[in-house]
Length: 232
Image 1 (cartoon, rainbow, N blue to C red):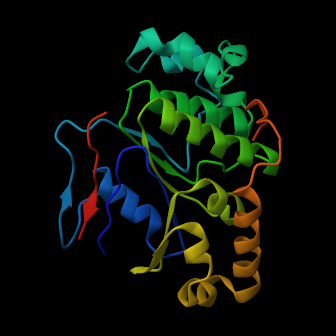
Image 2: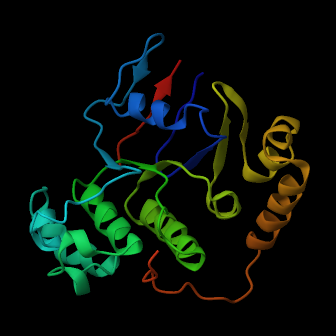
């Protein structure tokens, strides 16, 4: 397979279980090595990563503030804490956070490094449906304001199709890729996810590409150098 991502682009990888989505991300960010092919990154590329699974140990007393202080760019703590609604939980124990609160903390940790590429594996796991939409809108704002490319894996197909500029459908190879509405109508996507879901996605994307006067809610539910990754 071969793929690339450009600055400010939001790309989502979708696919069935066992398709290789998490393995691909792991190779792209350097946590795993490839058996074949190669990976190209822009020189001195800064990457931030939000893993799918992160379970703080209840026996380890560690506040959100202490956890975040382990990472760099402390001059950005206040700004990001306010932007991500983390400020109210700074003194909370990491192990007692809700799913949505923990997701926000992990996102803030990734952003503290001022990345050019943000990589997320199932970023809305543990967040309710309303919170998922807010999370993706936040990613869009961050991408524009910080010149940030976003590459993520997600099963939240309805929201993903509305939030992504490009969708890659993976099943041990790239079945199809392109704009959300194009992928939703692709025969290979329909074969993987079903005709009915494909129709729903096309309708959902059409609805969300129009403005209806609804303002973004605050993200509080539980719930630039050229940067390129090329995996051949």
